[in-house]
Length: 59
Picture 1: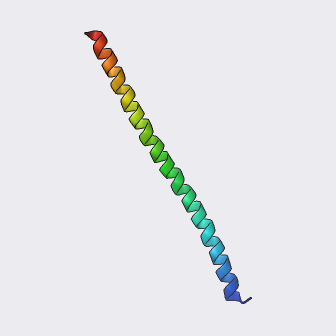
Picture 2: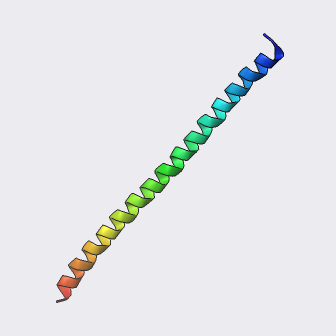
Picture 3: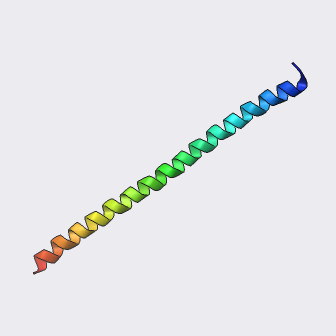
């Protein structure tokens, strides 16, 4: 093996490690955003239900 081949193999290993880390971070961020959106929708539904319940009880 030549010096160039060793550097190529090391470069590929480092590239895969960095890509693995970046994909992990990306999926964590996407999961957080999706969870945040779901929480916002559920909170809106609960707010509307509570508003309707208390509005009817005041009449």
